[in-house]
Amino acid sequence: MSTTSIPSSSIVFYDIAMRPPMEKNCCAPNPWKTRLALNFKGLPYSTSWVALPDIAKVRSSLKVPPCRKFADGTDFFTLPIIEDSATDSLVGDSFDIAVYLQKTYPNSGAGDLFPPQTLDYIFTHDHAPLVPLSECRESEFPEYAKFNLNVDAAFTAHAQLATHGFPFDPATAEITKAEFVRRAGVTCWEDFALVGEKREKMKDSFRNMLGGLAKLFLKDTSGPFLLGTRASYADLIVGAWLRMMRVTLPESEWDEVRNWHGGLFGRLHDALEVYTEVK
Image (tube, rainbow, N blue to C red; front, side, top):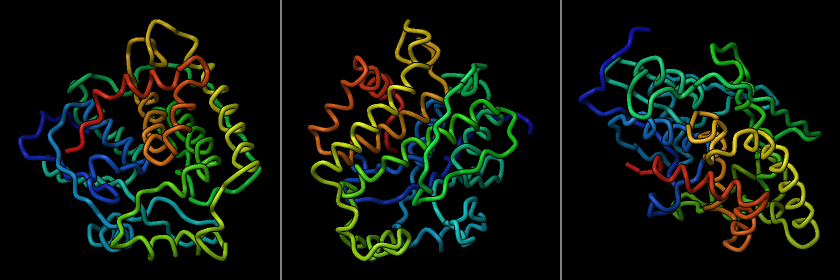
């Protein structure tokens, strides 16, 4: 793919609509990866907010095939998508979008999203995730692709901590909750509630998981990022999940998470604020 100068016309970024105000409540992790990457690259774009029940229709109308499937083989329609009129391109997976931005606008903004580094983090878990994960497809950035898959698996395994805190748009909340219930094979929305001893046990597991991830960040302590003072897409992957947790967890629990492991993940979250503008 040939490189392109920064487009004068905006990229359209399709994100999942939550309860207004969107700037405060947008919290889907994969779209956050794309927002962070677009802001990292300093590219002009606008956000098109899509209600959860309309995602399949919007994705189909743009002729962007689903990139993930449920365990039963049915398609999982989700976001983000970007539409770049400068190259007449539509890209519909957060990792593919990051690769596209790097190849198309290599020198824009803060520079290289994929500087060489070893990202030796593996997460293993016994339970099948409720939401299908992106596959670790062939990529010219295999370390990052593998890291993306493992971080997604690690946070998804603990997503029940956040489920009841999702700020759904009241206009579509009931149909959205019904879809979550259907996917999970549970009887009602309240089945997702995690309280008391079960919640404390899940929090312990989440803290331990982050402890394993923290070991990578401790290899270079010159700054808050994996490469010290230099942010990369790997930091954005973790940062996107932290954005979700910040919005969905009770405030007291988010404060706990921020301060675990010497405050490492609080510092990472704060250091990425420069890339969090919602446009």
